[in-house]
Length: 116
Image (cartoon, helix red, strand yellow):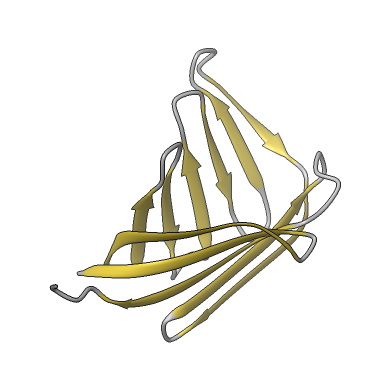
């Protein structure tokens, strides 16, 4: 099912950018893409997977993994914090990797796609 998405990305509660995108929600999995990355959010497992040409970053409730495609290697990345909130049509994911100075937060508001 197609969804209109309003996505706000924050670093330490400062808005970095806002995007209006179309995504699909099927079997509790939300998928969407922007100019650089594709995203897969599993609402049941509370995971975020962000993929681009170079790498895949997986944020799980208790761990993070980074895969560098060119090297075909995956590393565990220490995860200092992880919050995943799903409330009807809103998803909030925040995380702080050990390598980050400030936490990242992604807020997604979903609504049904309307035909114009």
